[in-house]
Amino acid sequence: MGRIVGLVGGCLLFFPGVLAAAEGGVDLGTVLPAWSGLPFAGILLSIALFPLLAPHFWHHHYPKVAAFWALILLVPFVGTYGAPAIHEVLHMAIVDYIPFIILIGTLFTIGGGIYVRGSLRGTPAVNAAIMLIGTVLASWIGTTGAAMLLIRPLLRANKHRRYRSHTVVFFIFLVANIGGALTPLGDPPLFLGFLHGVPFFWTLTIWKEMLLVAAIVLGTYIALDRYLWSRETPEVREKHMGEEKLRIEGWHNFFFLAGVLAAVIASGVLRLGEVNILGVHQHVQNLLRDAFLLAMFAGSWLTTPRQVRKENEFSWEPIREVAILFAGIFATIIPALAMLRAGEHGALAFIIKAVQTPAHFFWAAGSLSSFLDNAPTYLTFLSTALGRLYPGVPERQAILQLISENHAYLQAIATGAVFMGANTYIGNAPNFMVKSIAEEQGVPMPSFFGYIFKYTLPVLIPTFILATLVFFG
Image (cartoon, rainbow, N blue to C red; front, side, top):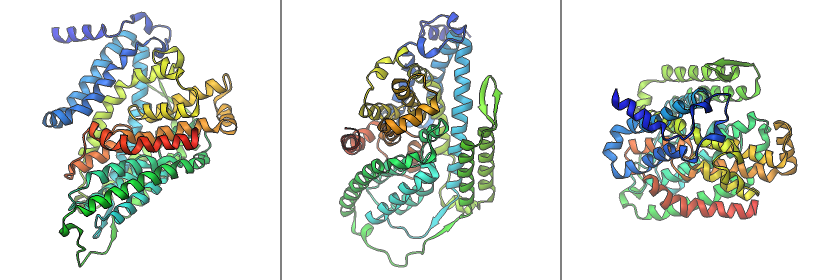
């Protein structure tokens, strides 16, 4: 008990505020110190370094590491700021984390019940075709849905290849991120924009940005994969006779997938009022959506033959890892998001003040989306643009004015948040899920920094610089 009291007391020193700050409905973003983001930095560094430096320890103890960083933040945060801090934690859990896990868990389960049987060979042409299909589907069934649907067929097609980790990385680039830019269904930040008043079909106007970026990245992949294909053994490159015809098992899961999409769309259209859950306001339509998603989850699990999931090499470990690590991320990210929401009145004001032009918004929203959750980052910079260009104007009216008069700002924010989620494993939820599935099936994936230095810096960053010059220069 003494050690626990000592830990709590030591943690309280981490925040120089006083308990009085908890009274009177204080705006936490204006009083939190910049170093309250250190636990968030800690969990990011843990995700980056432990798998590289201590893989055995990480594999067995990553839940404890995530819990450690969460508690290092939550104990002093709640102890110092009291009721407002508790409200922020509950809001993050009820409004963000739980619906997030329900959605990706449902898509993971449904996708794991669809098995593409047949002899797919991981040639450059086949791999490129799978990625192209996934990039197109991502805007309509979500990046998580498209990734879960196609990652396992892609891995099976390449299971005999020596060089295959690059294929998974480019799959993350295209299917888990860039492909989701055209509709609010594609990626969470765009859906949040839709809920705040951005017209549903407005995102189709950024097709030029998506086409340029996707074409460059896919073209780079084809060139790289053709080179690595030439280095495979003759046995791998030789066409085998007696190939099995392609067919889909568990096809009824497409109906469950359609149900998920309908529920998500309906939750953005319907207005059924609000309910109070532990002091947090939640929309009724969102609760109904989550309940329906759980029904789709159960329906897929109960109606899909176990043999289909067995042949799909389905297991719960990837979604378990995502759920645990993102619980830690969502907990420790609270101070960072609060300070960003406070804009020029928060400790991170230097970031907000540095953002002026559409190009600035593209890189600022994108850079933070590489490490923070891209949905609240999108909303933060959307609010920043509205406050700078249309101060005092009601949000929905201001958004319509932004679209008609300064559309480049919204295009920059949307594309930055969606595209640059591909910059790291933690930029978007499907990234980590795809990595976990690939590693579970024996693919030697690059480390956190290996991913950045080997692929992000030489492939994505030059592509984004070109997009900046073409669209926001």
